Length: 274
Image (cartoon, rainbow, N blue to C red; front, side, top):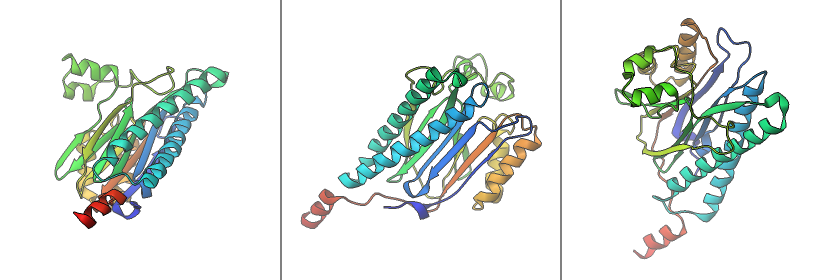
């Protein structure tokens, strides 16, 4: 089943006001309910190489996994768990490719990338991330960060050295403790959450929350509501108006309809004789 008409969405990236090139990368397969965002790092143009490899590898491998899933006609209620595994495995494969490229190409030495990805299936979202690229959800009037940064600052918050409010104002927010390509293997954090009609999911590179307070992100989404294109443009504008010290990428997905999985052959057989 195609999910193309189940979401309103926008994908935007901008170089910002300070950097001379953009090392972020974004990719989408709306008909599969898949969005991927990566924020590259490294000397020369290696950061954009790493982020580009990451999003392409994840898209390609998850698309192939979804095709296999469709051929096997997995029963509703179990498929989204397999989707989570497929997403995690694709990111781990991307890590291996980036690491090998960095080892074999001198101009790419030391490159890496953070990444956040979301895959919608059967009224659930499989979310995976590495580093400090984030995913937020707005449900009703509750705006919350779903992913927790893999960063030194977040570790200090977890240990009680900083409050979340103090961390929001800290200037030492960009020391990541996990990234794709830095080591031969990587620990990908994955989770599955239920999705409701009307939910907003925001994927972003750290260029957005570094420049714009969470309250202002929430207000922007609430103000323009279903006009996701305008919301995306306003978030980029706010970032740049506040200094735009980094590249900024935003992906906003508004769930406009439910998307239960269709029954496979076994389910149809049970319904026929149940």
